[in-house]
Image (cartoon, rainbow, N blue to C red; front, side, top):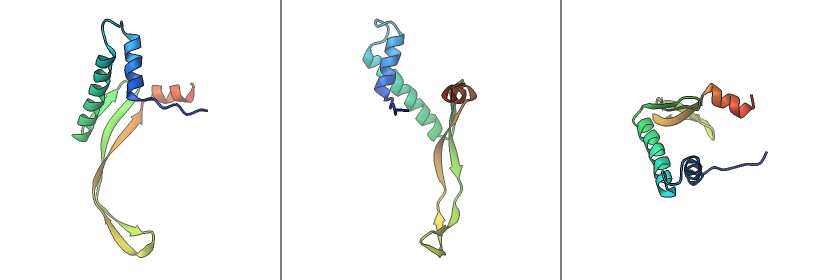
Length: 101
């Protein structure tokens, strides 16, 4: 299986190909793709979630502060601060598509 990397410009090209050329220019298609990513990032960074039917859900997960053990010196404890991380949960339809079902 070869690795294929899809960039934002590729998404913009695909969007433009699916719509009449006189409706969306390449530059406008790129602005649309950027606006979608910006909205997803903004919503998730504010603690919300973005659910795209048939694709998946982007959300923010908060990890509480904790005490961990230093792997180089197990007798030493390390304080790990609380942090927020983005998370993506694939929808069933998307998982099935990837699995070839």
